Image (cartoon, rainbow, N blue to C red):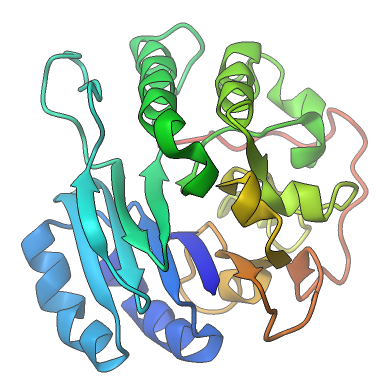
Length: 293
């Protein structure tokens, strides 16, 4: 089974990239984030095209913001929108944003999540992010062994997941509290499967549009597939499809792909294709583009 996650940063804009990518990579399950459309628009724009490729789909949208989806060719059962006690924003008692959807696909509970950005440390957005992550963990815990959580976590798990850790001092995405929430999720017996597979590799999933960050490979790794131990033990390949970040009108994120049980493209590397000339950065020498939600 091939599972992929991709923050498409507006699915309507990315349709000319998404459909050929589905035809090329042939994932069995796709987790999309930041679709930025309503459920009705998602179905109208993509329903027929997905059905022609054998995909069922479920979508939780909000129109211009957020939005998550699941596409599956291996079943789409027991669809759940959000999770129990999911906080809203700015009022925690408000209906939850379109940030989480799950279903049973290929025998596993698979979540597509778009974790809140956090924006600034100690802001209301940051407090919301930590609360959201804690409630997600509580929802995953009862069946963590048979669960995958896939998506844009808006967390760099470790300093090795950025082109220059010093550039992020004082920013969100790297604080002890955010990393602590991710570590608590992993402590349920789950694994960051790409990092487990490539413990020492330079591997990213996001490059800011500005400043030539992609061409210099000045990226960060914030898109993850976290899987319970029985699932993680089946991983044969785990890679960032860097080719999907190239070319005309790409998302600022690249898809991440994990192959379970067999690997159609082999154990092809942490990023495919690898960057030809990654920049050698002196700490503090690159001005950090603003991390926007």
